[in-house]
Amino acid sequence: MSVRAGFHALGPLAAPFLDGGDAALEADEPLAPQRLRSVFISDIHLGTPGCQAQALLDFLKQNPCEQLYLVGDVIDGWQLRKRWYWPQAHNDVVQKLLRAARKGCKVRFVPGNHDEFARHFTGHHFGGIEVLREAVHVTADGRRLWVIHGDDFDGVVQCAKWLAYLGDSLYEFTLRLNRHLNHLRRRLGLPYWSLSAFLKHKVKKALNYVMDFERAVAHEARRRGFQGVVCGHIHRPEMREIEGVLYCNDGDWVESRSAIVEHFDGRLELVHLPPGHELPRARAALEETA
Ligand SMILES: [Mn+2]
Image 1 (cartoon, helix red, strand yellow):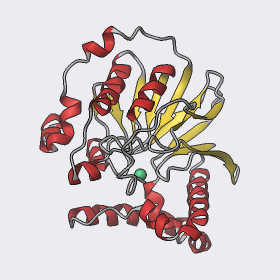
Image 2: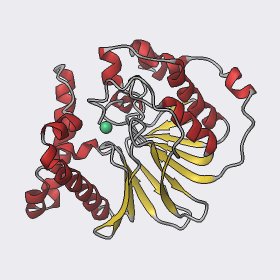
Image 3: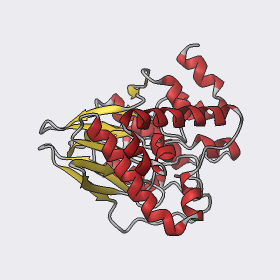
Image 4: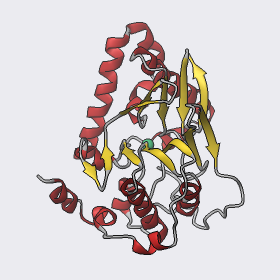
């Protein structure tokens, strides 16, 4: 199946990718000088009312970069399948990303669980955007960062403590098992095992859960020989050292409006969109966006 045929098979989901030029956008946008070496963003959830597309457009406009990583859950295929929601601002985000790629920004897309349909296109390019199952980023000061969405850890986090006793090979096996289980669930028409729903029902345990997720991701990054990891998925922006590994979570564009950025000297920073941006009126469908 060709890539284009594959996209047609996706039906309306593929529409924004197949749209033509964005002449209107280009006309009033002079090319700004690059301020950053790299930008990492994730959990945008285009296709849901909770997505803060306009805020993201402002951020992208203010922060041109050489390398842009889209760390998953960019488009919320799960929600779009339930209910179609695609305002102009969401289209503008897609066009903005395509335009950045066309203008020489190296854009890499690591799909998450909400846009896992794109995982079928791993290794392909779309308008200059490369789709990868996971990525490795080398900072200007030579550090190797593992770039993943993070949903592979959903199934192991609860078991992380006793898995640590049982050794890494079993741990890795459980990671793979989680991938296959969710693949199977999709084929059976069952919803993805939702982390946010889980968090809401176990509020008291939520903080522990986040810490377990962070530890599990950092542990695996270190085991694989990386100096750091950039992920998303749990909508908790964070940058701190865990077990000697730099754990970076770029947050989301539903609530925290945050990103991980790399300056030209290799310095990494967690940034939030400054206040002064209107919150969207529609705050529904915030659930199931983890
Ligand atoms: Mn996710």
